[in-house]
Image: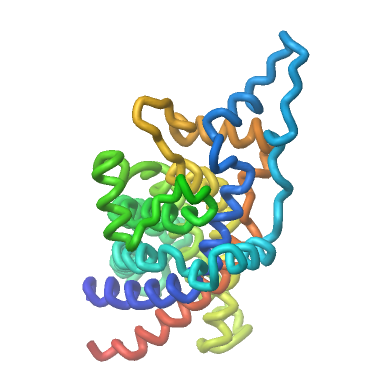
Length: 317
């Protein structure tokens, strides 16, 4: 029964991840808006520490470009990089879902079976949230290298040609990072990944179960496609609201380029958060929220609808 939960969750996660990958790529590009791809290390101190000792004005090029919406970002990617660019890093998505989502879905299923009251078949919301926190944290630690590679591959197209990493695949990305930046770079931002995964898993899986049970308990709909879609979309919205700030910081920390002998643009998650807020305002932590919910909604719907169907197919195994 334990292995079955991992298999079911893994299949559903890979299908959901691949089908919504372009939306995830647009989300990453939007979260990196406000960063200068060529001069991040020089730009941020100018914005963060404005000196009143001189009358020197910040030149116009240092002003952050206007934010654009997800549709405009998607069109720009297609125009500049081609339609295939919308699937940049899809191999990393497959690996990430195989490692991260398979682990979290399987562990959550195991904990759910263990903690469900055998007499009435109920599991308190607090236990669902705790199960999600545990499963998400462990899953994220396992899948962090693929997560870093995915962010790098998705963000590569926004860099100047001379600075692009030009990873051929997720294996090539992980290999290059290990050689040039050390093996520890594969776990860069791992604390953020773990925190985000705990929030996403706890809010997504727990809220899906809770919404589904509430709909069935109140007789609003029967247990079928309509219930699954409604509960999963609601769960996706909850997960997006809870995780977006951590996701923005995670994306920026993972994407930063550390030159040998040079100080990194960010000295960790808190430093990144403070510099982002100081330079771009607190709402910068919700950059990419529209594509996040646009991606999280369909992803969660595909995930749970597929999961329910896979469970039906494998119910006799």
